[in-house]
Image (cartoon, rainbow, N blue to C red; front, side, top):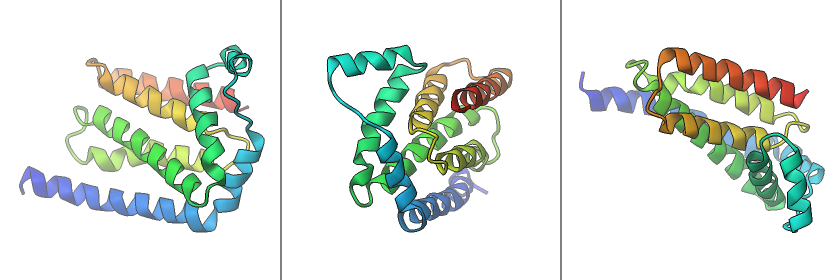
Length: 166
């Protein structure tokens, strides 16, 4: 079987997963995402922005809180969350490509599913998802992606997120 046909076979289930994820956030979960917007106040004031640098991962917090203010627009919350999950999935797929030659797109769905599950909780900020996207693409940009460093990345990321969320 050609490489192109094999790639197309992996992309179809992934596309269906993201369409189903968008439909879930759009039709079954819209009010919970709007509730997230009520928890977050974002002001583009210098004094207010300086408070972000007292928290861990300030760039993730600033980006996540800025994106959360658009959750009141109908359809924007589902689109933003799905787009961020897609960016995270694509970064993880890029990392896994040299490690597993068989279906890295499908394997990258596992950590994406964990993040999609975490976003369901109203007390988990969007900064978790934006931080995961930054982290995945920062790691994907590095040329030293090996199996050992990937396992260290995943374990340290989820350890940091769990201590961050608690």
